[in-house]
Length: 115
Image 1 (cartoon, one colour):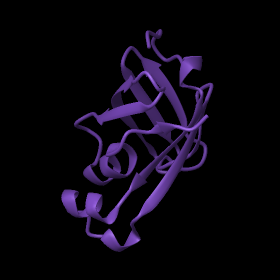
Image 2 (cartoon, helix red, strand yellow; image 1 turned 180 degrees about the horizontal axis):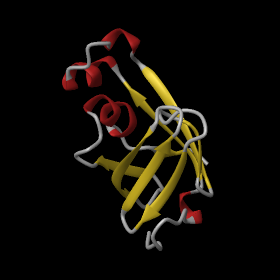
Image 3 (spheres, helix red, strand yellow; image 1 turned 30 degrees about the horizontal axis):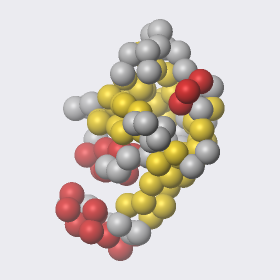
Image 4 (cartoon, one colour; image 1 turned 120 degrees about the vertical axis):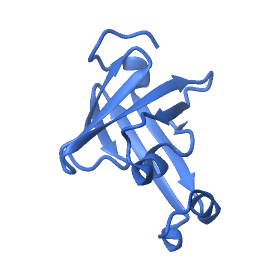
C-alpha cells in the first residue's frame, strides 16, 4: 500500500496469525527447536501492535513498502519490507539489520489475516 513516511495505513488494521513448526526451526538452525510448534497472533491497529514478537507497548509505522516495528520492551526497532496479497495476508522480508532469531520469529512465515 502507498503511504506517507511514518504513517500507519488503515488497510493494515486487523488480526494476523502464523504457525512456526519444529521443521521450520530445524531448517533455520534454531537451537530451541523444542519450543515449537508455536502459533503467533498479532493485532495491528492504527500504529499500535498487540501480541506477536515485538513485546508490550510496540508500535509500527510505514514508509512506502517498509514497515518498522518499535519494540520499547526490548529497546530496539525492526524494519521489514512488506507486501500484502489479495487475501490481505502480510509477507515480511527482514532488513539486514534484523537479528537472525528475530527474523525467524517475526517474519519466517506469512501473516495470515484472520479478521
